[in-house]
Image (tube, rainbow, N blue to C red; front, side, top):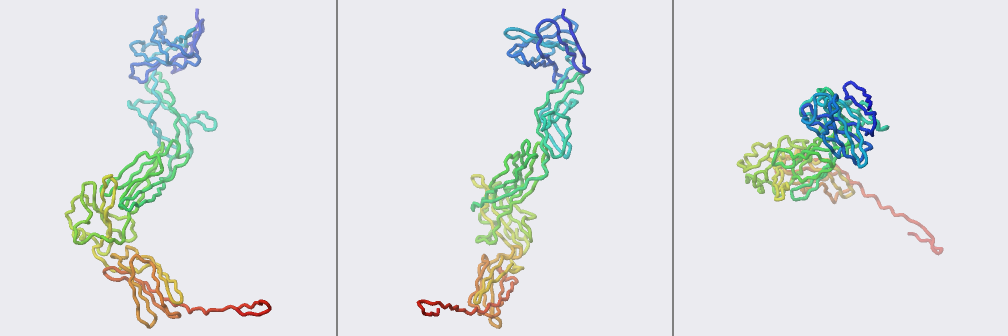
Length: 502
């Protein structure tokens, strides 16, 4: 007669071991349902030394000797519906493993199956981390109340310990959960290892270069720094937004960029953008940046006053537009940009009523090519009314010799020109003598004065001019030096007992 030894742990299933005759398998089944409402039970086991076996699952009432087979499987689990089981009273469940040459019985357990619930491991886990706090989130469609357990692995020993976060350290975590409603809940399996990086402290630093194709399209090349360990554990991605098509107000967005380089075609207009980096524990405040427009300061074919629109503007919905704005002193980007994307009813004169005198206004005509490339097909400056420059050329320097002088200068800043700069005027005169003046191109920044008289005082004036006249001059006085006398050096040497003078 077989003898039985049993022990009980509060809240757990009673586990029994057959101590009688016959071989015993060194494992036991575990049966549960995956939610309180489920009508299907899973019975699973972990055979360590029984290979290539067929497993047959049995059960019986704990106070009965009538065994019932629940089916066979070559796997280490069997799903059973509740119509084949007795779920409201205590039952015994065990497995018989059949191999080619022998069979063995597993350990058995006793329990009420309807009270045993084992949730699946948490899935689709998201993280956020601030200072020493880590927040983990995952789906719980039914809103079931659960207990959660978290453990982390020590890098040095590989052992799992209780969670205690330090701010700037990377962690490997696992989670499991169990029901708070079921009478005898089981812990779920542990999740796969979760790598937890640190927070990203700073937004990316963006660098850019522009390649001008001289056809109205520029290639914008962006790159940003690579996030280093421990921030980059588990991958750092980027969200990028760019306003690359001036004819529409909305930005174009690119999400989950894994690279740190990005190329895109843009017009000659300014390009605004933002970028944000994020890893598994969240993202950071975005970095905003601005790529300046390409501006022309002098144009051969400006918008004529007798034409209502620029000569290349052909309104096509969403494929072309007219853009114009003004820049005031020291500005690199305008406060307001005006866009027309349809047929223009206003004339140029009507538009000019809203413009300020003497301030430069830029206009662009944008068009989308047949290949959907953004292009600027016309661009220039325009003024409502031109005035004389408010300032003289800047940083004027003179290098003089006995009979000449070479002037160098920087252009008058655009904000002080008050009109199209057409030329520079250089005037110079010797004291008590008449003035001599020359006009030179507005693109020049150097001029040479010849045939000066040494040891004489000269007054030189340099000013810039528009159609309205010349602005204030920059005045410089020079004093060409006296030529140095030529000193002839002599040497005496003896050749064949004769003295020669050279």
